[in-house]
Length: 556
Picture (cartoon, helix red, strand yellow):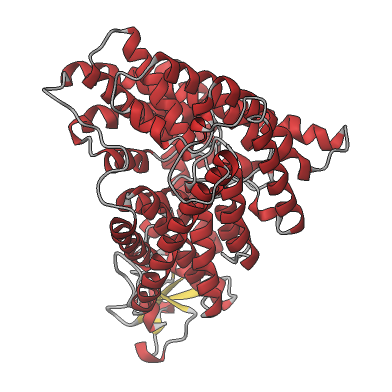
């Protein structure tokens, strides 16, 4: 009781944050090592599949010397291997990683099967190395998260602490992959943590920063896709076009999501109508990858070199059209089949290609084309994933194109607005929704946190008020007038009571009671305020009268 009454502070945190932060150092180093391992494993698989040699040199499938008729076969072989690994190993390795991490947090207490930590990077290496048009970041996020979860399970930590360390591993994996520690922390906040508290934010930041530091030693320093701008940018013109471009990219992101999940529905029909087991789906989806690879070999594999070329400006028409027309279809067909691969790199590439294609149609100079590509890349991340802050910081960290900050912010926010209106869920959370789990991603202060007990309690008549016991002897089932309603609600749930007596801290007297009815009254005040806010705006478009009636029902 005393700990509860004395915890009226901005943030709730205790000394265990030091323990978690110390463990996060180990997880950050381990996740960074796993990220490097996965990148090398992808390179090894690419060399083995396309150059028939044992090497970890970073190469793409496009330079392969295999005959053309062999190219469509290689992705199918990779798809068969992934299907067998998922069927006989763990079906949790299917998909692009981030939804699976969210599902582990929400439904399994952040517990991840050890097999996933082993099979996920191996399956991703096979899928991408055999030509799968995916990024490595989704599997790395899941692998790093699995490592964090396993460490937390070994230490027998609580569910909340396991979640923190799972997310720390995921953020560290992304940080080591892209050299983007700040964006990795923000991704954790916007997508995985479901809270903004020191107890979780500090360990995640520790792991992410350490992983980003180790990356500089293991993979090299500097931005992954440097944008070199020469001369003065037409900032005013860029600001004028940023929002329309962002809206357009947001629409494109919504279409990509619908395309992928529409194809996923067709794969589901293979099982329900044709009795084709999902184990074979990755190989079937890989047929589209192989065919696309014949016409656009640069669409095979991760394609970081394609992103780098687009962000330099003056990209070839072949690359721009190939990414928009071929890469997007190859990616959607293959990922919807349930294979193992990430979404970040492909959608970054598609967004950059759309924006640069528009810039070339307008005959803009090379530097301006590069900024358009940067805005397109960030806007696609922001809209498709529903993570505007992450998209802005990520785009800056991987390019160091800080001169384009203002138009980039506008483009990302506009895209986020467009997809929020067009899509009920992001490309990541749609998968969870299809499994029957609806995830609300709106952050807000709990209305009960802003209302004190004194505002809603049922006050006793002065003659009925009696002296309370000394504060250090008070039971947990007493509340203070200056406590928040949320604190009291948590105390009721913890102690299994429906009503508590209220003590005035200054007079030391019991002055009232509070129960579920009073807490609901406090919640009702927040509902009424939200309804009144909506009425104020909706009355502008002629719907005020109907909503006033609705408000009367809410408030009455």
